[in-house]
Image 1 (cartoon, rainbow, N blue to C red):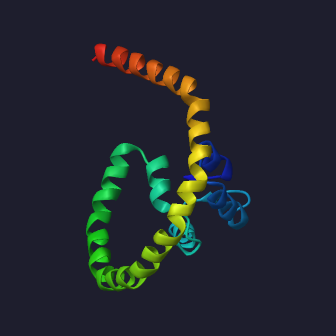
Image 2: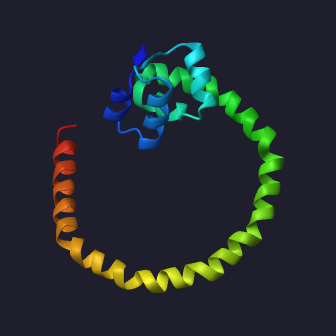
Image 3: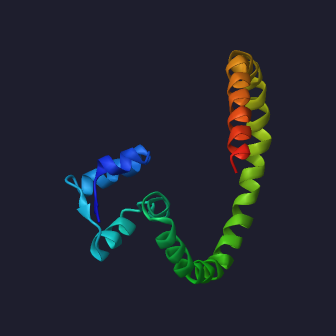
Length: 140
């Protein structure tokens, strides 16, 4: 398979990922083991790629192959993750106590104005959504 930045854009890849891809492979890339290893080094989102580009049966096989690796990874990192969570917890608590109330106070009027501004469009959207879903279900 040959992959280009345009193909990523067509699947709504985030701008950062497209930029990294284009910088490494300005003319696109043949998907090889070497290219995949380089994508890992560049921290490109391979899970996103599999969801967007692999057909369902191939994606299913990939996910099955990854299950044991994911389980082993989670097991290995669990102690470090626990230590990190315990270390960062007081910082998050302090942040929430200091920032969240002020944020909520400042944002409340803006959120209310936004909700009022979109209410009509949101109602129309949901009406269309309900009707479309009902129609689709009738055809089952």
